[in-house]
Structures are given as structure tokens and as C-alpha cells.
Amino acid sequence: MILPSRIWAAQTKPNQLVQVGFVGIGKRSSSLLREFLKQSRVKVTAVCDVDTTRRNHGKRTVDQHYGNQDCQTHVDFRAITENPAIDAVVIATPDHWHVIQILSAIEHGKDVYAEKPLTHNIRESVLLMEAVERTGRIVQTGSQQRSSREFRIACELVRNGAIGKVSHGFVNFGGPAKSCDLPGEKSEPGLDWDLWLGPAPMREYHSILSPRGIHEHYPMWRMYHEYGGGMITDWGAHHLDIVQWALGKDRSGPTGARRPEKEGDEKGAAVLYDDVVITHGQGIGVHLVGSDGEVQVTRGRFSLKVGQKVVASSLDKKGGVLGEELDRAQKAYLNDAKIQLYRSPGHVNDFLNCLETRKQPITNAVVGSRSINVAHVMNLAYRHHVNFQWNPIDHTFAKGSHHPAEWLTRTYREKWKI
Image (cartoon, rainbow, N blue to C red; front, top):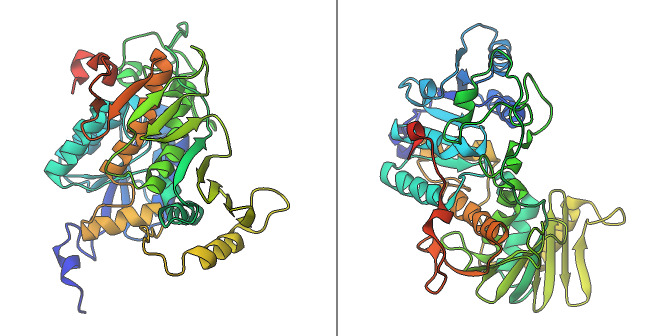
């Protein structure tokens, strides 16, 4: 059998299964675990969670799939990230843990599929990009909208000038986080609460932060500064990523932020790309307006309007079938497109392909870090109720915006400082 040299040069050889460990076995991880178990080139060998019930549930899922009892279980993520027998790590833990665990994995020679938002703050984004550049590891961010056709077509239309020069736009998702004010509850046995907190400040257990057992909802730790960035970083990680893609800013970012009208408002803040203003809290997901038309897109819905004519739309019940509407827009404006964006074969498949080719995936560490920095910048405008100019290349406030550098990071408990 003759194979291309790139295959033999890959770290994982063609007949060798990728040994994968999972860190975090919750609501999102359950979906990812099913997806990875379907892959014929993967063997899931270990799962990790600080909750005994979820950890054992992950083991049962893996063992039932393979028909054995071989899946290892761990409480401490380092048993996976530092294990030389594991090739790749899937991380789906609360946001305040992401970068610490990703850095541990890549510094120990592993590739990583990590859930969005990739980082908890701007300093973490910088550290992660530097580490990936230094090590050459593969990191795929779980911002899977880039692997969906409606988002790629929408961005190609914008990038190829179908709606003219973009003047403004809107993104729609929930609001920012607040400081955690939950009272203490009695912690149940089977949960390592200290390890759940990790780098976050010590506080008493509360079930809103870490619901016990196998829960079917997304826990609301994400709505507190100590652990997440609210819906700004949760859903914003998806939709602001599409804004970055559409505007061609994967190596850059916004140049400023605008606060909402009133302090305490949960919508109305904006990020600025020079003279293009993207306002939070309106529309259907991502809505970009240009001199000649507009594009709207969210999951399963899409619309292109040029001049006064609706070229394609699946926005409402009267709209067409999504695939047919995308075909119509593509035929009208993209048949001879000069700019053709990355066509992913599926988010997990793209990651696994890149483990062989050693090329960076569609939402690599640079894309994921820079996109989530847009959300972090927007959150600063909300949290501190300020307008400011931003330097997207250096990931800091631009000259003339005199705000403390502490806003770009957080305080870590001593054991977990990075």
C-alpha cells in the first residue's frame, strides 16, 4: 500500500488508534464523548471528573461501547494530561479551568480538543497562543459553527462583497456575568469541591455551580465572573467568532468597545472594528449590514438580501428549506468567488485529520483565542461601564485608554497560578 509521505510523517501513524482521554464528564462532554466514540480511528481510554457519579457514568458509556471494562477513571486531570500513553485530550470543564488544563496537556506533548470559550480572560488567550506556537501542538476550539455550511456561506458572501462594504451589525445572545453571591450549602459526598474550584477563590459549595449526578442542563456557574463570562462568552464565543470570520479578522480583532447606555444593562454594549460597529442584543444571531445588502445567520436559519430583493431566506415558516436557500445564494454570488473559506469535514473529523497532517484546524488556538477576546473586550465594557480603544495585535488597551492591566487577568489561587 502506497501512502503519502505526510501520513508516515504524522505523529499518529495510519494504523494506530488515537488514544483519547476526556476531562470533564458533564452535559456538553456527553455529546462529545458520543461523537468521539463513533470515530473508527479513536480509542477513548480514560475519563476524568471531580464528581464520582459523572465519572462512573463516563466509564460505563465507554465500556459499553467497546464491550469491555478497560476505561480508566481519574479525579485529577493531570492523570490524563501527563499520561504518556494518551495522544489527545478532550476538555469540557467549567471555563475557569480551560487554559490550565490545555497548557498541561500541550506541555506534555498532547493535542487538544477544548470546549469554548477557550479562555477565561485575555491574558490566558495570550499565554495559550504563545504555548501553541512554541510547541506546535494541535488545538481545536469547540466553536463548531465554522463547520456548518450556513455560517461558511454567510461569511463567504460578506468576504466576497455580496453586501458591499459592511457598515454595522448585530449579535444576539444573553447578558454578562456577575460576581458570585450564592450562599453555602452542605456538600454531598463524592465530589472533590476543592478541585472543582481549582484556581477560583475558595467558597462554600452550592449546587447551582456543580449540580450533583447526571444533569440534563447546562449549569449556571457560567453566569459568575469567577468561573465564566456569562452568555457573552458562552454564546458569544459562537456568534462573535462568526463576526471575526466574516470580517476577515482571524489574526486581529476589534479596535474598541462601547459601553451600554446605562450601568447594569445586559444588552447594548458594542465592539468596534474601526468604523464598523457590532452591537449586542438585537437580531437572530449574527446580522451584518453593508452598503448593498445584508446577511443574517444563526443555526439552521439564513437570509441574504441585496438591495431591496430577498435573494434567499429560511428565517421564518414561510421561508425556504435551508439547503435550497444556501444553494440559491451560492449560485447567485459565489460560483466564481475569489475568497473561499476553510471547508471543514465536521468539527471532530477536522480535528482528527489535523492530528495526521499536523496542519492547524478550522478553529485553532489563534482563532479560538482571538475570537473569545472579542467577548472578553465586550465584557469589559459591561463590567466596568467604560468606552475604550483596543489594540488587537498586542491584546491590550490602546494608547489613550488608561485602564488597569488587572482587568485583563484574574487572581489565581496559589497552587494554580500560571
